[in-house]
Image 1 (tube, helix red, strand yellow):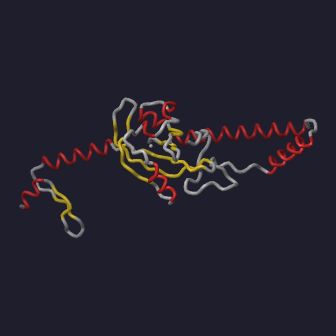
Image 2 (image 1 turned 90 degrees about the vertical axis):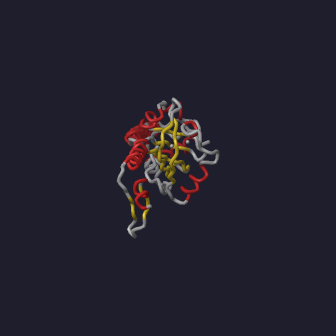
Image 3 (image 1 turned 30 degrees about the horizontal axis):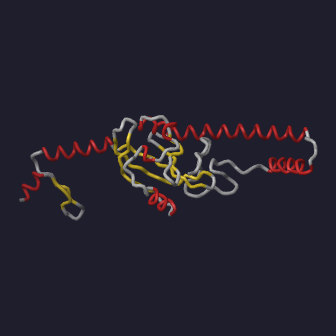
Length: 227
């Protein structure tokens, strides 16, 4: 629906419209606490002075690192849960058009494992895209707009299916990437074809008019009656 190294799977853009502030990164994690800053400052002083290791300081640092590790794991699990809860294929794409991440619905829709798509250009799932396809997308996102387009994506077996892709900004630290949600239009297109076939087959005139009475469309029988 993609350069810049792939973001860790524990990154979650909490505010997709505005970049995270200095006090909060793309995962929603607050900036280092004052206690952590103090520990880092003490460690820097110790290293600069060339002194021996302070057991108390090292113990405090170890406890702090373990706390950060638990927090990072919690954020990773939260990201995975939210990312994979979406029933539509969701891709994280770099500004250059390289796939950075893909949810489980995307694996199912494209019939390819995530590992085979991450790192490849988005042409892997839509080979018909022009080379400069990311230009209009990034231009729209720079204006804080959502970019919407209907295209035909490709499964791993080469078959195509119509999708409506909604793209929005996804911030990974200072980097603006793209989160693209692809809605499968197959059933909608089938319903439209069936509806059209019904209008053609019916022998009664059917007209569609606007509020002002202007004829918008109609079937063949209606136009025969109209002369």
